[in-house]
Length: 428
Image 1 (cartoon, rainbow, N blue to C red):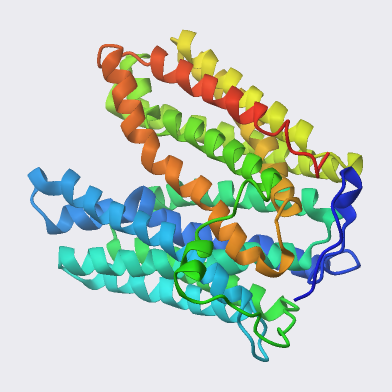
Image 2: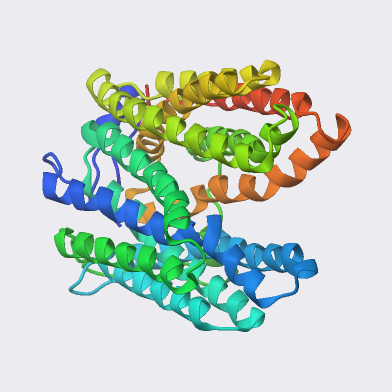
């Protein structure tokens, strides 16, 4: 196995990377990389935000809608949790003329499209649940290979800029998913298959452009339970920088979902808006948030590369996001809500623009990058499962319709996420 050079300090940001190119990543590769991110998330998030709920409503009685959708969504979350590190490990060990990442990009995109087609055409809740489990599994196979391909193709000095672009595209996909639901309405087939077709086309485009080097031979494996355990684990004592980056990501994602999960209810309860007005204000707020995020993410990624700094951007962005969350505690007007969305977009935009670059810089072993990134993905998936339950507890503790305790806790979590980057030593 190829080894990496020691990482004594900040100079390690230019350590040897066996699978990373020596020159700047090709513009065409970076462009198709960003488009693939947009396509994958558009195909995956449109069901999450709209089409899956519409499908479940068409199958089960109204009294069972919430529990049925919760069951289907939970199965998908389990698939995402398991599939990302598993397929990441498989990708790291894939040999063949088509490279390590390309096969799983294509297989994952095709599997996701097929799973969504089954959901769009079935009238069985059981089939919907199984198909969504498989859709999430294939989607995360593609995502594991995609994220690892960024580590493979983008040199350290360019990662901030590229990570910023990828972070922006992910959030553009969220906005696109919301507007797809608005434009396509309740047409189930189009609502599932139009985003899926766009996603498949963009991933295939990236697979064609990707200069994916074949792996000469499969790395050795310990086999047995030890291999299974290592698939879902990176020892934070041996790799403390990876561990601190994991803690920081976990906290920031937890804080974000503690607010976004209850955004609509916040507008209805704290601002006293009607259901229709709240939906409209929320859509405008998300648009403002996304536009600010796009500008902040690109600028932060570029500056991070130029200044050769990651930690200051990640830490300060977490604090800014916490400030935006805290501002909502005293917000009682639509204008105040929009102002808070600007601050939140600024904070998370800078975070999205730099954090992936920091994570790529602290990976324990470039040869196991997809597996390690799969482990890191737990810091994305787990908080999304924890945040709703924690939020309900905090809102109910405050009286059932008060959000100051929830928002204050989310702001405090952001501070913890900011402090967690301070002990990271191998990246400045």
